[in-house]
Length: 289
Image (cartoon, one colour):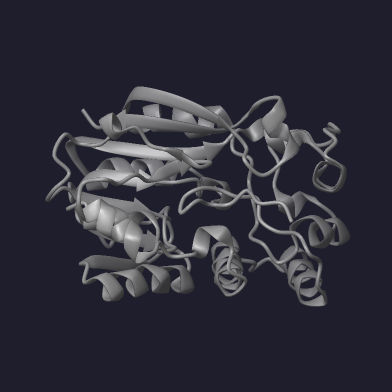
């Protein structure tokens, strides 16, 4: 099973066990003009919750207790904690939007640390995980079901922080994500986002997953919808559709939306053989002037 996932970040290239259900559904995706990738990925992530994907497992009481005591961390890429200096100097009372970050992980931790947290996610079952932790721990966490490209439910200048772990890989386009993030942030607000190095998508997934071999095969940009029905089923199983997205779209898109980039980080992919040779993830911190 290959995981690019999201960690509650981060990300994932999820799963790969072919099933007749998956084959039928992906075939339908290709032959109908009305196919909706957001709807498809919503169902896929709901299935990941049922399968106990690592990024769908809520944090335990001990993690929340430490966060309440000031000992907290969250991740954007891989398993690497985000530097505390990336966050506002005073997190208590800060309005934080955890964007496409359901799963009962980052949102509840930031809420326990004192932030006023809203979690928007495309998966109802992922949001259930956040509500589960909030109820168990007596935390105030607002949950909103929605597409990360459309934040119209929120007024302008609603948040101090937008925290977006690796999830853009599941969105067909990025420009609306950055425009909307810019709009809902207050002046001086911070956007933190993690994303996949698009170069990981050039490799043949079967060779990578089954033999740990890096066989160059796919041109970029890439989407798992580009594969044949049989290969999609074999390589991605019932997991969500993925899109490679260029660095121009990921970093340049933030700049085009008006952000000022302040920090850049990278990490190897924690779940496949590319980690021995190249960064699989990037993380950025940007500010709305």
